[in-house]
Structures are given as structure tokens and as C-alpha cells.
Length: 325
Image 1 (cartoon, rainbow, N blue to C red):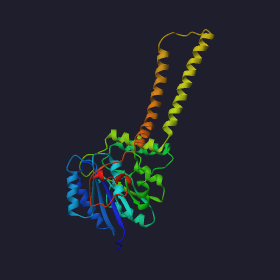
Image 2: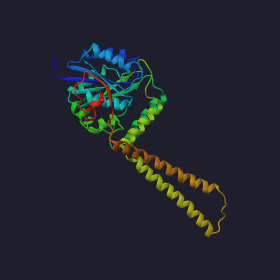
Image 3: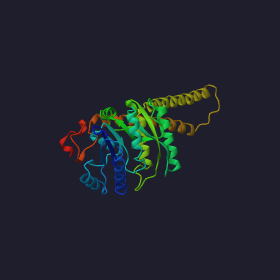
Image 4: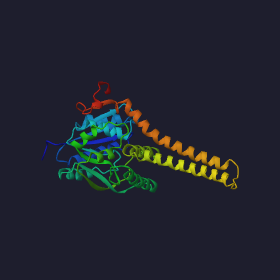
């Protein structure tokens, strides 16, 4: 049995006190079947319930449990990033705390890693407990972003995956504020393979991704990996200009040929409203990109730490300030 290899399990948590005991028990049972050293890095993303205290108690009982408590809620993708920064494993597994992604699949991911793959990502065959609307929008999202971006993200995947150390180190070099981890992993390249699985419904608690957050996440993903919206804004501008030229040409022709031209506000109102709407849409798209440039220009750290338990010095420059703890 090999004991010179470390597998890290990164688990972001936000208000998961109802499901956390089940998750931890399930993960511990799976770790017993992994023939390597293991650690579980729990990241408390500013929970407002007893999640943080429960994680600290788990750390006191089991030395394999490492805990990061962020200073506030930064969002799922930043919490995942904090876990990747702290994880020391030769391979790192990302899994959510809600048990929708079965921990047993980690064993198959490790097998794919031992076969020489650098990334083994979970690919959902089906999704229990999801509404038809959520299933439809998820399928639409993956197909849309693959049409718009220059990378091809595997369909029906999430952040549940195993990554080799060199992939994790590559991700840790990327410090952009608006993050889309699964797209960033695809961007790194390396050898990647799918591990199909059946996704379960939440074991307990409520979803942390309502429609508004899903929409924001989708916008972040598209803008982070595509400039097509900017080109679309240009196309809309040309269409609006062409429409205005057609209206102007018709008006001039009507005057020259003395064609009947009903005076009134209707045509003027339609033209102004259409062109004005196009301008606002284009400004909104440009504003999304400019806003991201503004956030990046400030060069703020991705997160601040409230507590670090059981972890050695941070791997990331973002996490090296003494004021983090």
C-alpha cells in the first residue's frame, strides 16, 4: 500500500449545518478505501449558521480534517479557489457538501488518475430532484457557452472532479476576480476524461443556487471566456444604423416623389425607441466588460481568512498576508 502520495478533498460549505454530519461521515467511509494518505479541506464561506463551529469540532477529532474559514461570504467559486490554494495533495478532488455528487465516484476518479489522466471530471447521466426548468436551462447554458467561447467545456458537468497537482498549480496562477472554475480547468488543457455518474437530490438543507445566482454565474462564465457579446454589440449597432438609414431613405424618397406620408409621432417614436434600446443594450454589454477590468485593476485579494486550522503555510501569494488569520 502506497503512503507517499496525498489526496486532498476540497469541500466548500455555506450554511450546511443540516447536511454536514452526513457528508463528513460519508467522506470518511470513502477515505478508508483510498490507498493513499488523505486530507479533507473544508472551506467555510462565511456561513451564518453553526457550520464553522462544526468544522472546528471535526478538526479537533480528526487530524485529516483541515479548515479554512473565510472572513465573509465570497461565493462558491472563490471558496473553491481558497481550498485549492490550501490543498497540499498530489491530486485534489472538488466536491460540494450537499451529497448530490456521490463521494464513491472519487474512487473511480482516482483510478482514471492512475491510468495517466490529469483531470477526471464527473459527468451527470441524470439529475434527481431537479425541476424541468433547471434541467432545460442547464443544457442550454452549456451548449450556449460552447458556441460562444473558444474552449469546449464538457456537457453536463459541474465542479466535481479530480485534478493532478500540475493542473491545480496552473489554476492557482489564475487570480481573476470573476471565476468559472470548470471553464478554467478546460482552458489548462492536459489529459482529461469523463467519469459518468447519477446525481442525487440534496441529502438535507436548501439549495444555495437560486435562479438569480444561476443567471449571474452564467453571465460571468460567458463574459470570462468569450468576446462574442462585444461583437454582438457591434452587430446590433450596425443593424440599428441600417434601420435608421432605411427610414431616412424612405422619408427622402417620399418627399421627392410626393408620396403620401402620414405625419405623426408613431414612426419617429418607433425609430427613436429602437435605436435608443440598441444603444442601451450595447452600453450594458460594454459595461460588463469594463466593470471586470475595473475590479481587476484594483488588485484586491480574492479572499481574506478568518481562521486556518491544520494547514501549513499557504501556496498562493493571495493568501500570504498575516492579516488573513
